[in-house]
Length: 569
Image 1 (tube, rainbow, N blue to C red):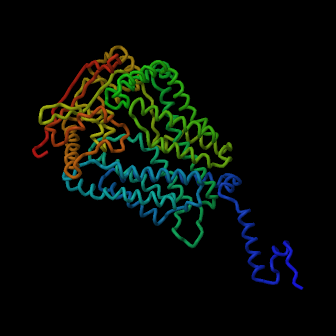
Image 2 (cartoon, one colour; image 1 turned 180 degrees about the horizontal axis):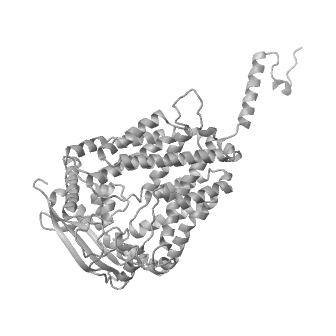
Image 3 (tube, rainbow, N blue to C red; image 1 turned 135 degrees about the vertical axis):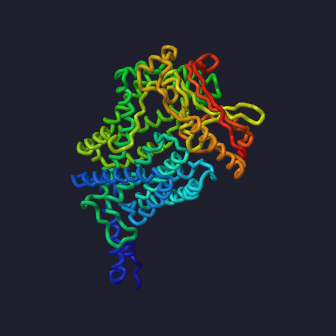
């Protein structure tokens, strides 16, 4: 008689089949391994930093400093600078450092974001220098066209090996150096250096910790000092974020160290004047809408003391808030909020800092709890305080005044129309033009610098007193009329070449740091470079104020000269 299997019997393995038994055993062992295998975050949470990991992180810092020093030497000559990104790419291919899976999640996130951002920037920030000026310049420009390709390729490889972030960071440094060398003028690094140095530090750390490393090497990576690689990369990341916080801390520290006294800036500085001067400079985002612009400035005027207090405390808090993950996140988000507000009230756009800060917020969420240990916090506080010795820390602290010096170009068309030229037109050196730093060729102008700022209380008080400066004042941004004329002619020639090749020079699409508001320069956008007969370069010193009809500019001194264009331009 055949009996039916009971339900329990149907689910029992067939012990008479050895192969089936082995399969079940292997499956069971695999499941147990999956259940008990720790994740990278669990490893980081359980591991604690020792002196070995701190020593390894210090070696990474030394490596960063050495690389930075070497780069500064190599980037001084354009013919050398143009090859540096390709050389660094070759080095990273040979010595790629730690693979992505071996570094901490925080470092991995920031390396990827910085690499993609700087890869895009290296592509979009074209060197707006014309061809045909000299054989050497043409050679440099021909090679430089391939720098974005190296930067973007490395940005993709960063997802596999974080050390490749060094390449797009170096590419940005190289292109900035080439632009400054070709135009023979200084280009501010305030907007990009913090991002570049973050990428360099983290990328170099991946190579140093792995003692070079090899792609697809059969041997396991030999770690520096046999340290714990995840723990060491977390410490390096904390050094990086502390160095970034140092930019904010020293901006606040600079404000209390101004010669008016520690509280003078807080209670006396008219921060809202920045918006008036930005409006007159053509960069104020609300400039085309007069009533809205006036309302924004008036609100800032009524609350400028409160705003000054909040900004100063937030900047100085960086040295304390580095101690906890939650405070780091909150403070970093607040910094991004201030960057957005600064753009809205001035046109100064720290978009690279905003993206970096968002990446840092995402990364801090992935940090282990032990980063709040006293040893790690002590190192971070020390980095915040002493970062200027190694990093390019910016110190954004000054007095805002109504004594505004405007240096700008005007295009004179074939029909005789005189049209103001936007700073965006100058492409690679647009930040220099926006800051009115193309040059002051004659003495007697106000001693204030970018948008009426100064770091001396004496100039501040003279500006309050009707801009009553002595006639023999200090001359900033000194350049000859020949040097200024050369800069304008080179920009014009580039615009002509772009119109010939593409039909139009789209200067507003360049990734500027300070955007001249396109809505305030529609008349210039309506003409072509071929319509320009010559330029006028004009420098004016005047006292600014706000009236019912908008910004007022009481001119005290004006100097100008004509920039003729050679035949054929």
